[in-house]
Image (cartoon, rainbow, N blue to C red; front, side):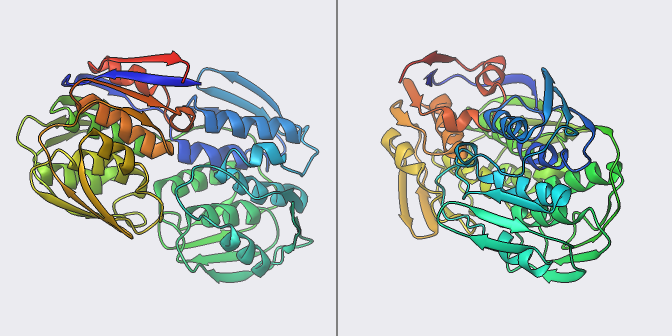
Length: 418
C-alpha cells in the first residue's frame, strides 16, 4: 500500500500534459474483443483500472502486449465467456465487458461488479435493456447469465442517460442483422470516442454525442489502430490544483470544450482562463469567491469533478451551495476535508460550504477515486503536512498524479506503508 506525504503551501506554476482518458479506455478495451482480431491502442493511461481490465481480457483468453502507453490486444485466441468474480469485484465498469462478450459469442456470465463506494450504481438498467433487445437473463445468487440467439430490432428509451448502460447497449449490438435506436442516451465525450473507435473498425453507429444513438448491425469488424482521447477529468483536476494553490498552470493535451462547465465556474470564482488550441492556461492570483454548482449528466457540471471543486470552494470567500444529483454518497470525502478545518454542512444531496482563509494539514483516509484526488488538492493548499492513505482508489484513475503535480512545483512524496 502507498501513501502521499504532502507539504502544503506551495503555489503551482508551469505546465504538464494530460494522459489518455480512463473513462474512454475501459469501454474501448472491452470493444477490442468483438472483432476477434488484433487491435492496437495508443495513449492508454497506466492506471489500475486499465490493468484490471487487461487482466480480465487475459483471463478470457486474449493475448496482450504492453509497451508504455501502447497496448496490442489479440482477441483471436479468446474462448471464455465468464468474467472472473475476483476481477469483477474490483471494478464497476467491468460490467460493460459483458456487452462485448455477447456481441462476440452470444452469451456471457458475470457477477455483480465492485468499485468505489459513492452510492448505488445498479446494473438493473443494463439488464432490463438487454432483455428488450432479445437477450435472455438468468440471475442467481452468484452469477448473472446472458444468452442471445439474435438481437432484435428495437427502439429503446433509457430511464436515465446512463453512460454504462449506453456503452453496454452499443457494444452488445454492433454485430448482427438489426437496427437499434437508443433514446435518452448518454452524451459524454467518452461515448463519442467509443463510437469513433467502433466505426473505424467498420461498425455503423450514428448520433454519438447526442441523446439519440442509432446502431445498424454489421457482419464483422476489422483490425485497427486507435488513439484514446485525453482525460477530461484529469485535465479538470489539474486545473483545480492550480486554482486551489493560487497558482499559474498550463495544461496541455486537453480538449477544452469537454470541460467547459468547469472552465466557466473557474472564471466565475475569479480565475483567469485562456485557451490556446489543446492547452488551457489558468491564473488564480486574485481573491477567489464562492459560487454554486450542481452536477448533471453531460454537458452539465460533471459529478467526477464535484469533490475536487467542492474542496476548492472551502477556501473561497463567501458561502457556496453544492448539489449532487448523480451519486448519493459522493459527499463522503468531505468528512476528511472537515478535519482540515473546512466549514461544511451536509443535508441529503446538498452541501453548504462557508469559505475559510486556510486549510490545515491532517492525516486523511481516501474514500474513493475522486474523493482521494480532492484530499490531495486540499493537502496542496493546506498549511503544514498532509498524509493521504488508502491510495488504491486514487491509483485506479490517475496516471502519475504525484509526478505531474511535482512537475508543477508541488512537494509530494509517495511512500509505501499505511
